[in-house]
Image (cartoon, rainbow over all chains, first blue to last red; front, top):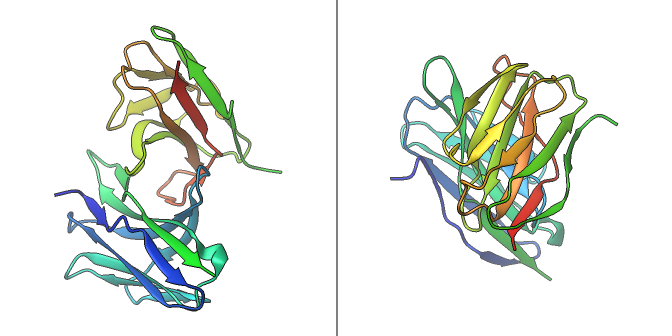
Length: 113
Length: 113
C-alpha cells in the first residue's frame, strides 16, 4: 500500500460545480497534512494546511478524519483558474528524530467553460 | 525579492555525462531539499540538508550527489551512475525547526540526449 494515495483523475467538471478530492494515508502516526496546488510544469504551491477541526479558506474546505486516515479537499463554485493538479502531502515520522513529507501522486482537475 | 532560484530551466545530458543543477535561496532558510518528479508520480526526496556542511540521503539518492558549503546554495549533481535521469527536478527550502511549509524553486527539466 502506498504511504499516500490519491485518485489521479482527471476530474472534468463544468464551471460552478462543486468537486471533492480524497486522499488516504497509511501511517497512523502522521502528524500534519497539507494540500498543494501544482500547475503544469510549475512548482507546487501550498494551498492550505489541514487541521483536525476542518478549515475553510474562501471556496476551499479541507477536512481530516484521523480514525479513517483520510483527508479531503472540497472546492465550491469552481473556476477555470482552478484547473491544476492537487497534491496531498502528509508529514510522517521518519528515521530518528526527523519527520518526512510524503507527497501523493496528485489529482488532476480540469474545469470546463 | 526573496525566493529560490533554480537554473537552468531546461538541461540536456549526454550518456555518461555528469551535470549539475543549481539551487540558490535568499530566504535565510536552514533546510534545503531536492525532489524528483516523474509523470504520474509524486515528488520523491533525493537529498536534504538541515544545516550548512551537512546533508542526508533521501529515498532515491543513488546516482546523485550534493554539497552544502554555503547556507544559500545546495547544488545537485546527476552522475553517470543515474541510469534514468529524465525528470523534473525541484529544489525547496524551509526555515527548519519543524517548520513544514516548503518553498519551491521553479524547477529544472532534465532530459537525456
